[in-house]
Structures are given as C-alpha cells and as structure tokens.
Amino acid sequence: MYSIPLGKGRCRLLARGYRNFMTWGVKLRPRWLDHLNTNKILEQDLPLIAGQQAEIERLGRSLKELYLPLKTSDTLVIEYRKWLDKFGSSLPFYHGYSTFKNVENGELDSKPILLDRFSRHTLICSSCNRAYQVTNRVKQSCIGVAIALAAVAILADDSRIKIAAISVAIAAIIISVMADTLKTRFEHSYTRH
Image (cartoon, rainbow, N blue to C red; front, side, top):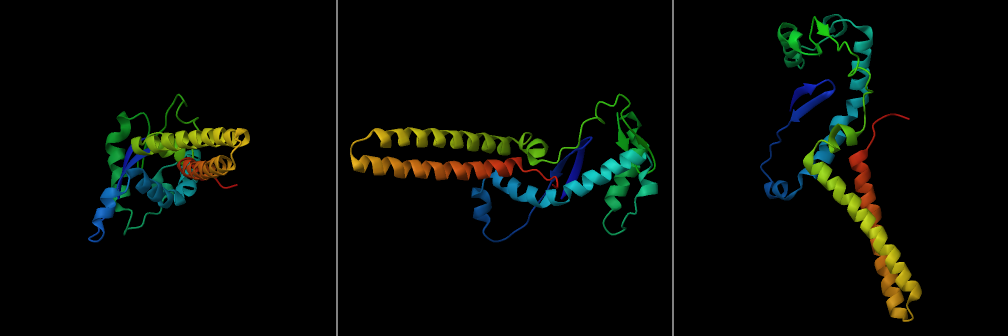
C-alpha cells in the first residue's frame, strides 16, 4: 500500500492485493463494497494519527526532534520528509523532517480535522458517493411504498388484499432499514464519545 499526499490532511492510497483463488468473485464485487471493508481497517488508527498531527502542529517543532523512526518500516516516510526539506519551500505548507512551513493566513489551519468517513471518503469517491445516493433513494422509496401500501390495507375491503398489502409494506420497511444501515456505514464517524 502506498500513500500519496494530495494536500494538508488529504492523501490518495494505492493498494494492491494478490490472490490466486476465487478471482471471479473480485471481478463481480462492486468497488464501493471493497472500499467499505478497506476503510474499516484503515480508519482504526485515524483518531490517533489526527491527534498526533494536531500535537505536532501545536508544538511547532521539527519531526526530527519529535519523531522516533523505526528503521524497519519508516525509511520511506523519512526519505519523503527529507525530500520535502529540499523541495517543499515552494509549497503553501509542508512538514519535512528538519524543516516545516505552515499556512500564514490560517485558512487551512482553522479547519477542524474531520474524522468521519463521509467527508474523508464518500463525498470524494465516485463509486461510494453513487452507492450512498442509491441507498438514500431506496430508503426513501421504500418508506413511500410502505405508507402507500398501509393506506391500501386500511381502505381495502378484501382481506387477501389487506394481507398482501401489509406483507409487502413490511418487506418495504425491512428493505428501508437495510438501506439505512448501509447508508450509515458510508457516514461512519470515528470520534470517541
């Protein structure tokens, strides 16, 4: 997995998975479903990382003073930060290994760090955003169908029509609850309460 910085508080992750079994299932599975499962894993450390970043910014010191790198896993991170030391001065902000520059106008610094999947991923990702919109429409449509069928059941004289209308209304409510559960997974927040 590779993380490519896009801006302050934003990055693009490139991940590659390998398998030599059930490859047909990977081709059939929608991209947004993979993202939901991957986000669950990646976001486990999000509050910790956001807290560390806020503390580093608050202290206003270099990473070289604050950071104890591991030689086995942090080599790429340190080399990237050293590259920023050499070439980051033209950027509006950066945090290299020995040097850093913050935004002077405070516009980007004043934004709170958002720890919810909706603003950090769902709004940006085309497949997840589309799936989120579809779940919203399914939920609302099913609620409308359930209300209409409940009215039909109340107004109908035939008991078979009442039973059928009530049964389909219950099924519509169940589908609506399932769509709302999926919708909530796209919005999930990772702040501790």
